[in-house]
Image (cartoon, rainbow, N blue to C red; front, side, top):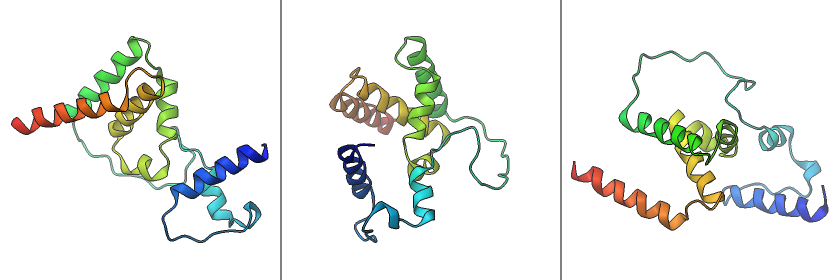
Length: 139
């Protein structure tokens, strides 16, 4: 990795941490647990240490089914594919990955991919979110 690329990655990492944090002199002084947290790539096919979760007989909510249908239509129209969806979920980071529900990760990833590919702008996305929010508040 070139020094310029390394510095840009390090700067991006510094911008993601809370204001109060411990600074390290060099990458060689990062504790092993922090290094593991920074280099672990999340994915939905296992590999992370965890414990069994109870299975609840929960049906899908309307927004979850709408998200599923929207994402499938985006795939059908060629805007993205399942690998792009998985990659967009991996790129969320642990806090958002574990903090969002399953379909919340899907729709967040879809929005990020659409903006990244230039198919929509962030302003268009914000306007559509406001429009839907206003429509739902009327119900």
